[in-house]
Length: 303
Image 1 (tube, rainbow, N blue to C red):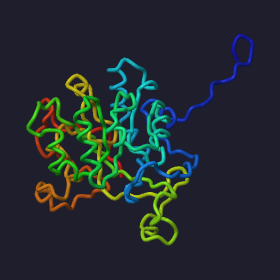
Image 2 (cartoon, one colour):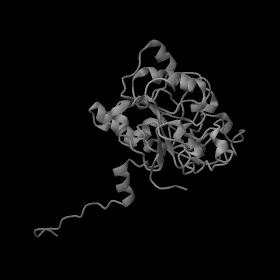
Image 3 (cartoon, helix red, strand yellow):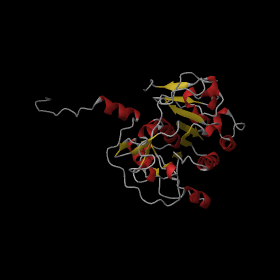
Image 4 (cartoon, rainbow, N blue to C red):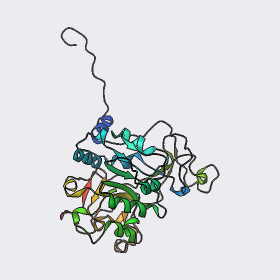
């Protein structure tokens, strides 16, 4: 009641909705995913996995930093994911306020060979994990001069091609990649119809039993985290750990629970017996390589 008239109260907003709007929290989609269409390139069936919404929510702050550096609002930031599966990246990022995503059913390597790349401010992708995709992606990222974020397995940093592409012994600490490791292991989602071994009666149907109409069939084949590069000294100084994650300025800071099985430090921490479902084991394994900072952790433990 105001000035002698009935004035409707504003619509109530739940605390979870308010938090989501403020922090970029991922909301689970409810609309069934599109029926997969034939791919315009050859691909191994094992590579047909899409990223979970919460993994994208963890890098919202990084995308906003890039947008600010480019002088554009987040909704105008041009994001390129060169590896297509079923288009979930565009749907998930649009829900987080980034609708300008190029993720087309096209051959990434053919575009590289032609030199005709889509205009973009940042490359963001979950590449196929089979050989030689991570190696080819990293070679491109290192030469591009553009900020990039790649969600990849924990064994990638132990490969010779990783440091050959990014240069362990070249440049300064400010030019090296940094890492966003989730406190809770990421799941992946295979769109129904993309893998024959996940159909009824297939070889892996029983081990990939959880399904979601909007996301697909759940799997989690590897411990994974975000590898981030091309940000430059100015942007790196403004990076903060996302809630629910640990920010590591070098591989020496990776927590025990995300170390590769081939990393000798796993023996120091009990032979690799860390709980990789709740991946953060607690302590930093070494001094930071990014400005002398110690490992920083965002948010509370998730179980």
